[in-house]
Image (tube, rainbow, N blue to C red; front, side, top):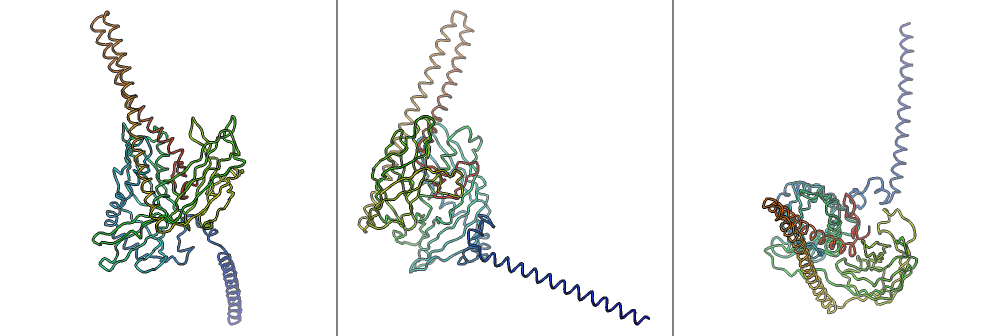
Length: 513
């Protein structure tokens, strides 16, 4: 009986083990089939699908196999960061402060860094791609991510006051192009060129905070700083624009590294049709602002009360890189009381244009160049232009470069003269405000003489207090005047995606929001 019972129990256990093993194998096969199906599904995804799944912070080495991971470089960078931070701070201060002065709007007398430190947290390089190797140069693209703890305070000086603005929670996601100019002497690098690639679009997030005050007390100042940051990135840092940094101790010619004019784009703004009406009473008063670089803008005349205007006005613009630059056209509605409203925007890649051929092009106006953020899908009209692209000869390029330098100097001189006139007007306004309370104090003192010396003294004291308040009010009025002029200037010349509480330069040329 014991033998029979043992045989039966063994058979039962054996069958159970076989059944369990078969079931486990079936489950494993099913999982492998599901995994294979998932892998096949992932293999069919393109870069945009992967971006939707992983978000905007997808490292470039995932979507571009040519990007190589450089964990070893990040380890070394973390050790070298205290020294790199000090050198980078000096380069940023020396390179960016003159540019800030060029973009300084009327009403602002100075824009400088009162504090500039990149903090203790080093950036992270997700991947590196060698873009090109040619004799004497190495071009390298770096997938750059940084969410550090910098201490950046921008001193905004007006005619009567200075306000420190702090950049907080700064985060940078961009592709940096670095060009190394080689030489035969140690350290074998004579100059470094740094620029931001336009694609994928740079993303720079930050929050503005007034040190010891509130930005809400000065309307327009926050948007002004946002527009300056946007224009600076577009006009100075985004490829083909670049910053050239010569390395000390090595004498070298860096003229070949600097950006030079490539050609002239002649644009005739012909007409617009079916523009969107922004007026409650009557029709919009449209005009067109066009540019390749935000620093050099052209503007058509204003045509009153017309949604299908005709301009037939011709302008000439300089292009530095036909392959990467665009012609931007913005249609605005002039508003004499408030900031002008944008009716639409269009972008024309210069690479699509034929050489030395007149082309008539119809451009569909959009609410924004970033179509992913467009909520209003209504038709905004069509803008018709004629374009002619003429590539420069070497002599013409040098002549255009000289003219550009003269235009920049003239622009700076005009800005300084405007600031001086504005300062004189505000000073005169302040003097008038001070004289009025003083006169009031005199009347008050004279009127109370009969009542006795004590009352006279009291009346004079009140008058003096009123005089002080008048002087303070004059100062605030001058400050407000400067800001309103700055805001009006910025509102008419530059628009960008930097108007929310959380700033983002993810759509540089950032003129596209």
